Length: 326
Ligand SMILES: O=C(O)CCC(=O)C(=O)O
Ligand SMILES: [Fe+2]
Image 1: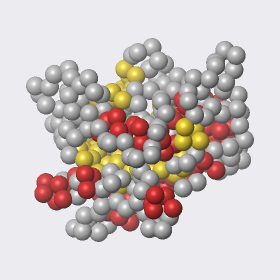
Image 2: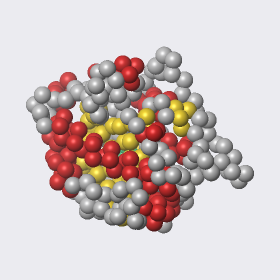
Image 3: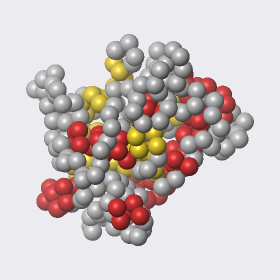
Image 4: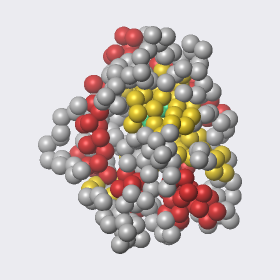
């Protein structure tokens, strides 16, 4: 069992000819590894290349400029995360990566911005890279379109109407992250990772990775399998909201990164995290609670779920009034 490649040709628009065939492949991946590649996804390769060039420019700004734009200055965690700031696997050493987080531009008077909800609000942009904001906004728009379509194919895969998740995905919580992994140290021990083993927290992640490799996925039998880069493909994986939405039928699998194949060069990756609307209710969809599969999760809102995850890995204080259920 590996990570399948799903070809989205003739499945990119609602009602397309191959939608049901793709939905079947998606179900197979979702009930096993929770990971798949997508090919013919409709995103211009030049746009992806531009995003990597920007990632390099952002993450190689002088240290004092990166510190000035630290995500610690942002109530919604936009900006720079420095080396070792996050520990994705609490049993391991702090992660050997640095990253830049940004999100969609929301109008200041949007009710979710006013409420200070996680992910809705301004990003921090470096003045010296004026192209950063428009480049990221274009990339996010393309990722939003692809994510919406994957959610529709997921609905079909669950024998639901194609548009079942559309309303939950209006005004989604999205985060674009650009990551730089330094070369893995020669004297690293087995507790050293670029990104420690973790599951993603949201609905779907669309990952662009450079050609070096280093990402591994844990299969249901416990084996770790390399998610080797495939030219022209994104890696898509399901986050923890999906098991909650499907009562455990679909999986969010652990994955981890070690930058060990790059010959000493840094590795760059650009994950895009797509989550439903902050207030969307995440509870088992029709057909997923059965006599054999009794209800396994407490229903919650998407916002409550996400907030709980940030608190876990960054040790954030719980915001007043937010009571995420487990
Ligand atoms: O860099 C990668 O390949 C994966 C990054 C990742 O898993 C994450 O940011 O959640
Ligand atoms: Fe991840």
